[in-house]
Amino acid sequence: MPAGELNTATLVHEILRAGKNLFVPKVDPAAEGRMDFVKVYSEEDLNSFPEGLWGIKEPNSHWNGQVRPSVLGDPGESLDLIIVPGVAFDRSLSRLGHGKGYYDRFITAYVASRGSKKPFLGRYLWMVLRRELTVIPSGLALREQIIGHDEVPVVPHDWKMDAIVSPDGVLGKDLTELP
Image (cartoon, rainbow, N blue to C red; front, side):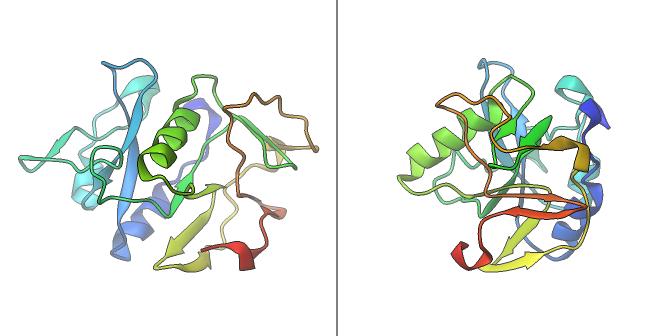
């Protein structure tokens, strides 16, 4: 597991098995700090990913001779949920990332490009399915990553999470507020 993060392979395989659209992050090595989310077509596609930055598997920009759709590159693509990694999370839903700002910049660009509200931001593990919320009962967040209220240092461009799921339960929004 790179950087001590939990393996999400089971979740990813279940999303694909259920026939849902799956987009995964892809860092643009030509543009400092730029990341987009690109479409994953199948288990075969997923298994073909080469190792990218920091030893994390990333998709190529093409699949079966076609350019992969990307969320920022195609206004027709949208996200209901982003599962956001982090080093630590506090009880006020702030997140301490790995210090590169990829996710915060992506979310800001996504919201600006859509002129709309952000997708649901969750730390392992929420899945929005056709505007119905389904909680997958799986403890993927380490309890050691959850710290007290307002303990994560934040700056104005940092995005708060909507939910944080750990073996001890769910922190975050009231389920009735979700899309």
